[in-house]
Every structure is written in structure tokens, then in C-alpha cells.
Length: 334
Image (cartoon, rainbow, N blue to C red; front, side, top):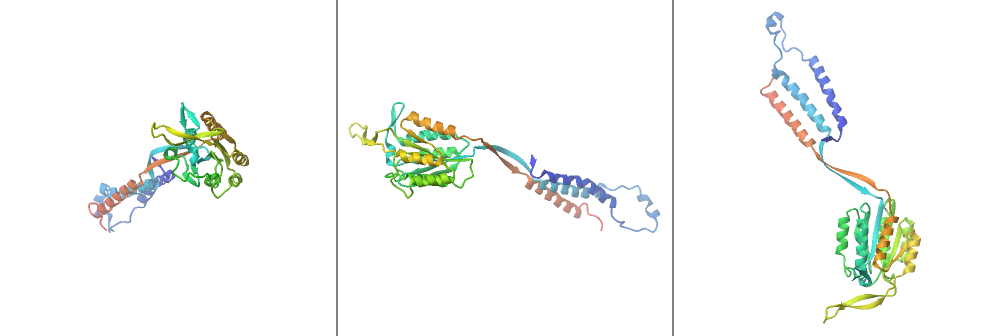
């Protein structure tokens, strides 16, 4: 048990001297006699126990209220939260071309979006002390998840995402970057970064990507850009063979706008990476993880069960008892 205001317990030290002083002063005589000989037989009579009980009870009530003022409480739990001071927003392209399957993992084809999601999930697992948010963009940009230390919630949101949930017919890189920057610009973090992943060129939205990069640089946000897709062309699924049930593909050109992505990174002090195979994609995130490290600060959160309402209730119960006894069993002559 602890006290929120333990210094108030010092008031308990005043009770003994106050009780002693009150006892010394006493009360004036209730009766006046012409001669003490009339009451000589009463000289050996001591004060009765009931006569001292009510004053003692009153001092006890005062002590109980002082303890209540000190706010006693039980500590139920204590949690330590480490926060690195790094805030990260991942801006992920969800345009239709992200279903192209130009990555191979364990001998199986994996599309760009699932590959990006996989490496991002691993990155999140390696950054438990960072606040991380998610921005999604295709024809428009959306906030997928606000900045949070609840990475389980973030991972669940990532798992639910599928290409086609938002308008996938264009790529608004500038709007996606701008939305990510807006999530970070007013924060007082030690380090603020955006990881922008896309497989195409800016062909939609209201804001030019380089203008969004200038805005990021103005508020000291570093942008790492990742161009997704192998060189040349990539197989895109176009349906299933009605006879064999196998997935049918057609080759589509890979049109990552590397020049713009490099300029975005250069303007903001970040780096540009090209992820053209699964292993390189993982290495990119591992390198970003090493580059963006800072000392963690620890915050403690303690949950208490407050006891002062029970102590106050006990004090009032004693006060009621004192009033009842003073008017009944221990009633004094006026």
C-alpha cells in the first residue's frame, strides 16, 4: 500500500499534544459548594471509563480522516513502455499493377503487394519501440492506420488489406507522400521518416511528388523511397484457364519512375532503393532498420486501486457512532 500524499501523515503527530493540552485545560466545575467537606468522600473517585471513551473516539476519527486525506491506495500493476523517439509512416502503393508476380519465394510466385506487406511486417516486428503508421494510395491516398505503438493492431490491419479495396486504376504518389508527411509534421519526435513503396509513376492526384518532397524537407522528414519490380517486364495474372484452372499471365512493362523517386530521397536526406527480387527487398528494410536507430526512453504506467473512499466511510461510521453514544449510553449532564 502507498499514499499519494504521504506528507499529510505528519498531521498525525499533532494529535497527541493537542489531546494533552485539551486534557490539561479541562472544563469549569459543574457545581459550586459552600464547603469542600460536603464532597470529601468524592476525592478518591477517578474518572469513569465511559467518560474518557468519547473524547478518545473523537481523536481516533480525526486520525482516520487525516489518513484518508493522504490518499491510501494499492498498486495493482505497473507497466513500462519504451519509446525510441522515431516516428515512421509507411506509404504503400495499392494500384492494380501491384498484383504483378515478379518475386519468387521458396519456388512460388508472390505478387508485389504481398511481398511489400511481408517485408513491412518483419520491419514492424524489429521496431517494437517506434510509433508506426500506414498510408495507402492508388488513385487517391488514405490513412490505413494512425501512428501507434500497438503493433498488433497495425499488423492486423495489414493482414486485412487487399488490392481492389480502393480505386486501383491510377497511382497518386504525390498525394500518398503528402498524406504521410501530414501525419508527421506536427510531432516533436527525434526522428521522423517516411518509407514510400511504389511500382509505377505518378499519374493521378492533386500534388506533384517533388512538391510533396519539398514539404517533407521543410519539416525535417526523411523519405526513403523503394521502387518495386524486376527490370524489363513482369507477369501479371489475368484470370484462370477454364480447362486446367491454372493462373494465366501476360507480361506487362515495369515502369518505376526511378528518377522521381531518387529526387524525393535526395531532397529529404533519405535514400532510394530498387527492390527487384525478394532477397534484396528484405535487405533494403534491414538497412533502413540499421540507419534509423535512436536511444529508447522508458515511461512507466502504474494502475492503482484507491482506498481512501473506504477510509472516509469508516471515519464517518465512527463519527456517527460517537454522536449516537453521546446522546444515549454516554450522555452527560448539561
